[in-house]
Length: 149
Image (tube, rainbow, N blue to C red; front, side, top):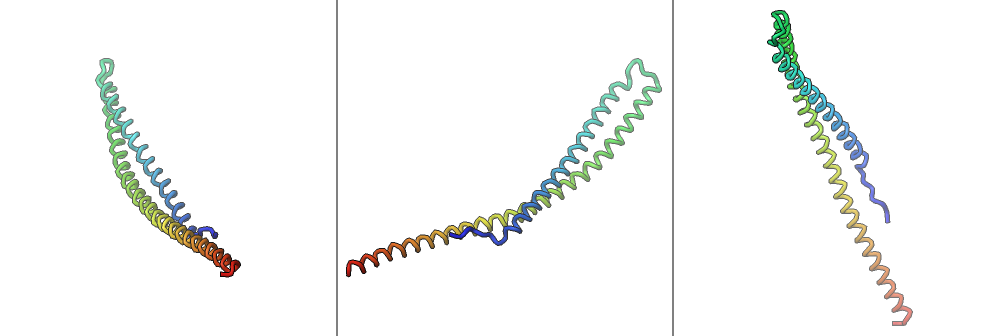
């Protein structure tokens, strides 16, 4: 019995490789977005801490002004990070679309391979049945010839 040979195996491997590459790119984009979200959270926590310490009893006008400027800088940083996060979200969505497309392309070839394997198995099974029938019919015919019927 000959082995199953899928003609599009190389294309399937290429598409699987492309799917894996796009999955890595999606992971990188999600990682970058997560890092930005963490930085935004850290800036918000630092702002809350600074706002709480701003009017402490031991602080004079200079320290309060310094805290005000620091809080202002944290707000600017947060706004810049929010803009970067919005761009990163767009990059994640684009990477997700590319990944889903690559995954769909690979699945199409994979399903075609499965379908062809089923057809191959069915064909091989039918050939084996025919061969067994031929062998059994040939045995009956040889017995009939040897018995002189």
